[in-house]
Image (tube, rainbow, N blue to C red; front, top):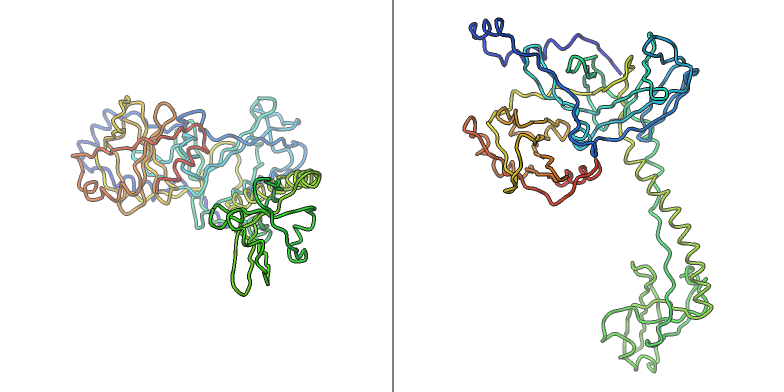
Length: 461
């Protein structure tokens, strides 16, 4: 992977500065009355949807590598930590780590997805993945030792060269640390051939229904080995049609049948019985049934098989979830400080159309100064927060994929979908300073966690 380490992108500053007016009077007034320094801050909208940390205990006296379940890893050298006063840490260190990839994780984290220029202008950020890492000993913060670094190999689904940024709390802005391209994730590549066939639950034994007629015929157990363990079975009708029910077709018990066949169906424990003679054919769904001690033994065997099935299913689902988490690429960087980091590119805003935005919420009366609206765009990897104070500064690229979501009191959300953007395209493009009121649709969904917010946003189109 190639890493370059420029100063804060002069090209970015040039792009941002180009948006400013060249009016000398404005420049003079700005010198005499400088605007307050603008800062960004991490501000989770709700504690309930702030993504949770994963905690790891690592030794301080030897090198250690943390393997993450998405195929990423954290490489820690020996004697990597010190206290604030510079004393080396000799105890085990607790590392907290979390990643942010989805719009729900980004919204829940409250991490600002824009970068400020010195003149106060800003540009949006489109992420290939972010992470936060911190360290402590018994609640006391620790720091990365001088001349030491931790290498974070973050799993990502995004290819291509991206800049690497660190959020500087005191400056309230992002610092550009360089750029790099990802490498293939060997864990993801290794996991693909190991996919298993989903387990099939065992069929539950059926008790004989004394109100139904029974059928008896010879079974080829070589063809149906699953029936070999069932003793004393009789067959009973398993369909819904009264016309086909043997109870209403007494003639089938006296007909001289030439052939009898049994075939499995896609319904667990249900088979297709076919009877044929020179004169007639008769086909019905049937199930094997038992009674008495035979049924008791079959139920005991079923419970044992169900326990094995549940164990196998849990292992299968865990493996399936693990494979889904193992992203295709690894983005690696050696960091000298704890904090929030972001693989990101600056969203090209030159195609954006500004408009004075307002928002309504299905007639629900909500104090608007309490609401932040989020624009999700750029392949769902740019998430821009618009608090009430910035609604008149709203802009969007009509050629991009766009969605809006707002978190409302009472754990509700309101949305304006991609289809809504398409349906109002011309009106939005021509709105300009006259403005546009986005009719946000309040969803009947309670958002109480990142998982529930992820599920809600999945339906935005």
